[in-house]
Structures are given as C-alpha cells and as structure tokens.
Amino acid sequence: MNFDSPTLLADLERATASELDDLEFGVVRMDRGGVVLNFSRRESQLSGLSPQGVVGKNFFIEVAPCTNNFMVAERYAEPGELDERIDYVFTYRMKPRPVRLRMLKHADGGNQYLVVTER
Image (tube, rainbow, N blue to C red):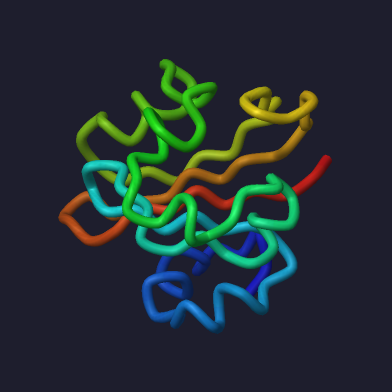
C-alpha cells in the first residue's frame, strides 16, 4: 500500500490492525461517528499518542480537536464518497507538525480513514 494508491480505501478496508501497523504512513481507522477503531503504530510514533489512549475516543473532539473544522471533520460529515488530499498542520498537544492528509470513506457505509504522511 502507498499513500497515493487509487485503491487505498479498498486496501485499508481489508487490512488487519497488524497490517496497518506495518505501513510507512499513519492511519486512523474510525467508525462513521469519528470514534477511533485503530491507531497505527506509525501514527502513534508521529503524534506521540498511544493507541491505548485514543482507541474508543472521538478523534475530532477528544484526540485531535485541531481537526474539528471545515477542512477535516466536516468533510467526513458530508454525504457521498470521500477521497481528498490536503496539506495540514497538526497543532494539538504537540509542536506544529506539517503533514499531508488523505481523507477516505465510501458513500454507502463502512469505516472512514485519515491517512497521514509527513511533508
């Protein structure tokens, strides 16, 4: 799997938690309400947050409130398919961290994903 793959959403849907941990980029797997289901090892390393501390919490409210805005959280709330890349800066509980985000979800259900790579 790579960050720019056109099949990344399907690949992430099939991936186990262990396979997410082996990726070179960070992955946050969430349910449709924004509750964290998996927080990959790479995302833990990049953010300094432990998977045990974030799984089961709302990503946009409790884990990274700096993403609870029109650029990130509200994109997931919009109906339809989502596959969008943006440059972003994480600022919550850390020094500002410039990243490239890829936001992914199917139109008809399933989980949603925030994929993170450094820039």
